[in-house]
Each structure stands twice: as C-alpha cells, then as structure tokens.
Length: 474
Image (cartoon, rainbow, N blue to C red; front, side, top):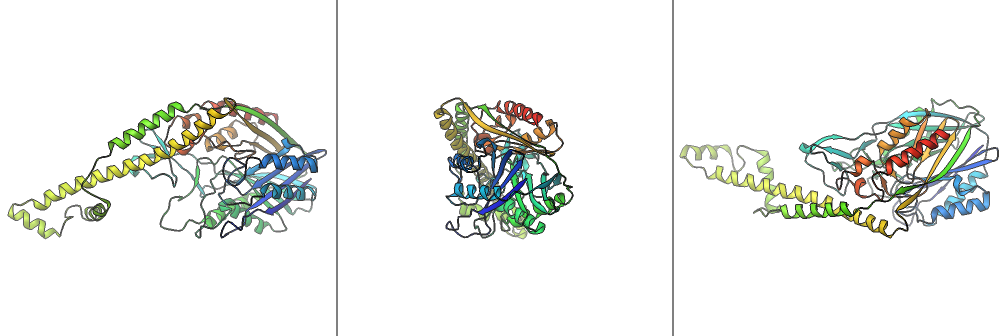
C-alpha cells in the first residue's frame, strides 16, 4: 500500500517566486509495517538554511503520536536547492505525511535506471601540481594552463515506480547526484533544477502522479556552465533534461505486485577531525601568499587598456607598425624599450591578481576550518552520531547518509553492493556538512569539501563498511 501527498512550502513573503517549493510525503505499508519517505525542496535538514535543527524531532514526534509510525521509520531527504521555505515547515511536513497516510491504495512496483550526463559536472579540478580545487562562485578559476583534468560524475538515475492496480502511475521516486544551485534569470525563489524536473515529470505522467526527487551523492557535482557570465543562469533547461531522461527510464519500468519491504535504521559513530594542523598550514599559506605580492607601477585603470593593446597586437602594441619601422630605420629603440617595460609590468600585475585569487580561496577555506574546529572542540564527545537507513522496496534498494557525500563514495557503494538496483541518498535525516573521501581530505584548502567538513579522514572506511553491511542485510 502507498499514499502520496504534497504541500506548498514556499515562503511567498521572502520575495519574488519563480516556481513553488514543496514538501512531499509517501507513506508505505506492507501488512503491519509502515514507513515514510519525505522529500523537501530545501538546502538541508537542519544545520544550514531555513530548516532548523529541531525540525526532524518535531516531525517524528508528531507522526508517532498521530499515526504510530516510529521515528526510525521516517526518512526525510533535502533536495539541496537553495530556495526559501516557510518557517512552519515542520507543521507542513506533518500535514503532508498525514494526508498521504489517509490516501493509501494498493500498488504495483518496479525499478529502473536512467542516464543523464548533460546536467552536472564534477566541480573538482585536478591541477598539474597535484592539488585539487573547486569551481565555486566564492573562488576564482585558476589559469587554464594549470588544469590537468576533472573528477567523475554519476550519470545514473535510480527510479522506483509505483502504479495503482489500474496501471496508472501513483508515484515516481528518482535518485540522482547533483547540486541544484543553478538559479533562474530573475533571481527569484525556486526549487531549481530538481524541483523543475519533478514538475515536468508530473505534468507528463498526469493523473495526479507525484515525482519525488531523492538527492544522491552530489557533494562535488555542480550544474554545467555554473560560472558562465555571458548568458543568464537558468535551471529550466537543465531541469527539462533531467526530467526527460527520468521519464524515459520510467516508461521502461514494468511494475508488478511485490511484497518485499525491509527497513533498517542504525546509528553510527564517526570520528571528528582535529583541524589544528590544517589551520596552521593554511595560515602559513595565507602569509606566504600575502608576502609574495609585489608593488607595480600599474593600477587597474592603466592595466586594463595596456592588457588589451598588448594582446591585440603583440608585435606592434604601442602604435601602428610604420612607426616601429621608422624608428628601426633611424636606429632608435624607444618604442621597443617601452614595450619591454610594459610587458614586464603586465606580467607582474597578472601575477599579483592570480596570487590574490589564491589568497581569497585560502581565506574562505580558513574560515570554514576554524568554524568546524570550534564546533568539534565544543562537542560533548570526539565522535558524531549519524543516522543510516537502509530500505528495500521490491528490487529497489536504498541507503542514506546525513551529509554531502561526494560522488566517488556513491560509486563505491554501488560497486560493493550485492544488489543490482542500489542507490544512495545523502542529505537525509540531518546535516553534518560535507563528507569527502579520505583522499580528498588530504587536499588541504583547495576545495570547499576539504575544509567544510567535521570528519576525520579515516571516516570513509568506517562508513562504507557499515553501509555495505546494511545493504547485505537487505
């Protein structure tokens, strides 16, 4: 049995709205067993953004009181869009779950896979000197000549289709790894790529079918052309691509009666990081970069026109060619001497700019490191408890994590799982910031994931082992 419902959670008082943000609930029941899957168009379940830390407890307590569904059997996933939801989001979530529970119908289920590689790209750039850096609005891009490669993506769309007994679709749950932070040209409030994709899916399926987006391991996956400055940022086109690829997969899924319904809830202790050494390292790098800046005769006002002239005409930048040839006939070198001096000043000014860009990256990440070191030192214990859920709905197998898992971890778990149809949902039942790989955490200060993390580097092996154990039990 399954029932679905949604409630508009958009904060219409926060400013212009491009498209609504929803909290959606699907209640699943097999015999005496019940569970709830909730998706929210929000950045996170607590920690950051507009959903407060007491949200999860409020929702679970209310649902246990009214529906008798235990807290451990409620999974709430944030899409990680950066839209603004209402402050009473907890009450709206309870409303959605209760409405879904009152609309249970028998369902047939099926699982499938889609493919979409045009929506996202790995935001970590592999540099020729061995570092990795991020593509973010908070960071300047490095010189193209220093970039050696890029990281992986996960193009797989995991699909669970639930049909009414008539064969009409009731719900589609689709799991995909991305950062839905593209925005819309007007800058208005939006559910972004994934919310827009869900609307397209629902419009095409018709009949009141509901699309539930489950965010995957999108910690280091950006929208494509994320830093494009020559055209408006528009999530609509990317949402359409994701929707059409999902619909293609949905239409290939054959549903059947299937009573397999398993749910596992565990709490795992993961080690907190001691970031003192990283902070010292980044402070030293901060000082080194600052001390490497050198004065030049140029300012922005004189640099810009010189840069244009000397790139436009490398051989004769200061004036037309005939004047250079005239001086050459007379044995003079005034223009050539001036050009040499200007070229060196341009080079020095560019070096300063690139150094300052590196310095802004260090400053940004150093603030993150200090924030998390303070959090870890003030924490009551040297570990952090994380909720892990494993669920099986027919052939659809899902495991969850409350942080921003980077894509390689999701790929690892899919590879290690004994099940063909295995999917991973980050951003679920809490928020503990980024969860990069052990290798990525060794890359100090180059990317946000490496600094915006409270976990010790060896957390990855502990988590992956436990996640595989949960998958094996399903």
